[in-house]
Image 1 (tube, helix red, strand yellow):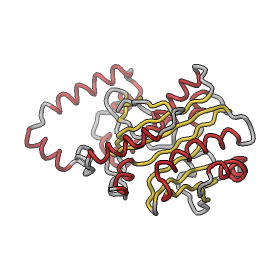
Image 2 (image 1 turned 60 degrees about the horizontal axis):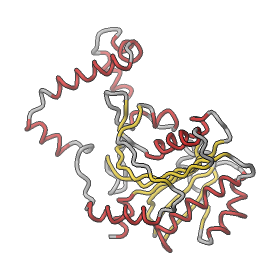
Image 3 (image 1 turned 180 degrees about the vertical axis):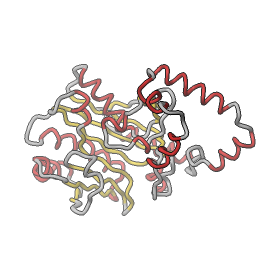
Image 4 (image 1 turned 60 degrees about the vertical axis):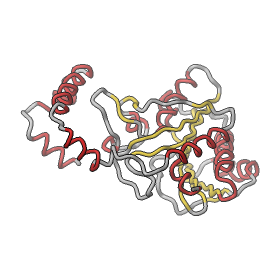
Amino acid sequence: MGQVSERFWAKLPEGSRDALVGGLSQSELQSVLLDVSRERAAKVTPARLLQRWQQDRFVRPSAMDPRQLVKTQRRLWELLPEKFAGVQLSPLTPLGTSSAIAPINQHQVVSTVRGTEVASDPTNELAIEAAVRRRAGKDRVHLAACQRVVRAQAFDQPWMTAHFELFVLVSSARDTGSGRTEAELLIDHLRFWHSVLGEKAELAFTSFKPSAVQDRIEDTVRPALDVPFTEDTERTKGAAYYAGTALGIGQAGTELGDGGFTIWTADLLGDAKERCLTSCISTEGLTATEV
């Protein structure tokens, strides 16, 4: 992307890049980009629109039967414990939501001309909302959302096209020492995912670095769950994304989701004692395994 974009920048008059990136205010830049979009949209013909609909992977409909998907969504909400507050997220979020608090390249996100980006990961958004509620004085925050997201990168799983749906949990609380808070959050999340996936659930964890959480998994989390919770020592994915401990969520040999501890609420609130656990599954993936 870097070489390609540099070639495009070279076509513009000298100083254009500095003006667009830092020389204009957000409102001025938005006005310029809206004018460009309006004039380019005016040139779109019905024939070209039909062609784009057929060829552009960002706009093609999902192959999933929405009636089956709604059944999955309903079951997830019905199984969700009362302590988790449901949040209906906007399809848009502030520009930089993914790259500012998570190590995500902005090229993997669909940015808009209005200083926003199309939602690409509801755990990022829920972490921001959790920080808002924690700052307002709430002792412990548990949030859940079901959102359709758009990502620019390609995926291997057949149900994960450019846009797909995720059911996510985010919990945030202040550290009480010795990994106790992390253990309590893990139990809340893992109990829910086991209730969703049943006896075919495959729940795993990976410790990317030594911490008290490892001890609490042995003496607190596993006894409280009373279900298999295996250690995946081979995993490397997410080592730079999660803070210490990551989760794997699957069913009968199929990977459905992911999760782990992050430093997002700690960064948002400027408090290293904040703990944040996220976890999610693909509702389309879950539906596909059950149909």
